[in-house]
Amino acid sequence: MSKFTDNSRPSYLSQNDLGPWGVYLQQIDRVTPYLGSLSRWIEILKHPKKILIVDVPIEHDNGEVFHYEGYRVQHNILRGPGKGGVRFHPDVTLSEIIALSGWMTIKNAAVNIPYGGAKGGIRVNPKNLSNNELMRLTRRYTNEISSIIGLNKDIPAPDVGTDMQIMSWMMDTYSTKKNYTIPGIVTGKPISIGGSFGRQKATGRGVFIIGSKIASKINLNIINSKISIQGFGNVGSVAANLFFKAGAKIVAIQDDKTTIYNPNGFNIPKLQKYVTFTRSIKDFNEGEKINDSKEFWSIPCDILIPAAIEDQITINNANNVTAKIILEGANGPTTTEADDILRDKGIILAPDVITNAGGVIVSYFEWVQNLSNLLWTEQEINLRLNNIICNAFNAIWELANTKKVSLRTAAFIIGCTRVLQAHKTRGLYV
Ligand code: NAD
Image (tube, rainbow, N blue to C red; front, side):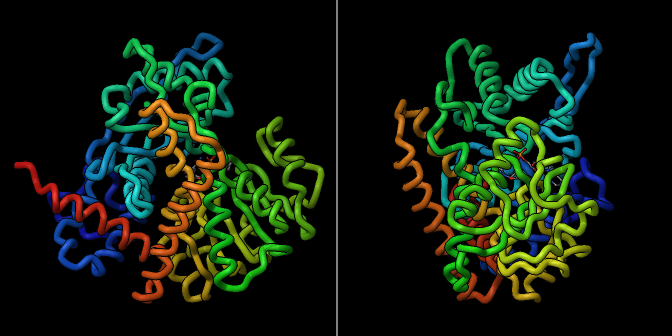
């Protein structure tokens, strides 16, 4: 466990179980010995800069008033404004949001875009709310966090349980408060109000690009390769579709309710259409349903893509994984102990901070277009995305081989070095 000095322990989290923030701290501890003299500044990465907890009361359609707990955390803003998504999920905790904000800091630095790291969320099941309730919740939350977000301060985006519509309401609420239209306050918006071509598919596209690069390095042919995916939302379904189009067989899919299996591979476009209407893979009439969700992890496959939430590949299932490659579409899906087991099994794990960076890279393009009133074509966006993510990946791959460390450690070395160098250069304000 990470070494906090006594007077720097976070009083706002349980000391017995730091949750996902504990996993983030372990990852920082692992990389510290590789940071040379910059390690003197490492504590900055263990201390989130600003944490806002907000009460979000809304009136439900039946007239009852409910209070939801929301958060916005700016982990680090040394290299630029805070940047990170907003999550609506029933299991959201402060520890989770702080950890996700920390991973955003590392990710943005690892791919070298000029942002710090931030994240927000509300503990709520959006599937239980009507459209109007969801709109009221989003608007009230935006109002509550409007004191700390801003075009050059902190720019939210979609994450689990939020989408383009929610970004539109956030943009409208913030703009209305300021009395002028500010498209760049959020990214992941619809094109009609300043969104970017390619943004919606960018994270899944990044997962596909990284997967294809690693596959070619180990001579794994994508055609007829077998892929299992946890999470069939924005990231999972887009990655599934790109691998499907490239000739892979998506043999197993799991969402929050159901696990389905088809050794011949699912028809992904058909499943995508089905999920658009049902919001779940439940009762899809192809393949077989697996009743014990834990069995998902031992289904034979070449590539495993966790694309749902944190803490999924753990000491309890890492030994069962048969894949040659794991692509972390989700943020923080693998615990530190599981990382070690997977490494000992010879599995190549492409870490979240590079694998799912496509989303924030194209968010950055969206923000740049908003700031300069430009509109780039989808082709231009995809080309720029490809350049940034491939350059970052190549540097990480090379460093991992030179230093004989995992891809995660290599990505963290690059990310942490950039943040700590910025900290050293700026110096401490006294
Ligand atoms: P989403 O809400 O569109 O989809 C989430 C999917 O995960 C759904 O299919 C849901 O049913 C499933 N899920 C949720 N809880 C689950 C559980 N306990 N077990 C199995 N499945 C579960 O979310 P998304 O935008 O696709 O995000 C997925 C992951 O990717 C998250 O970790 C998110 O932080 C990360 N990510 C998203 C983006 C983005 O641009 N959307 C960018 C970078 C990283």
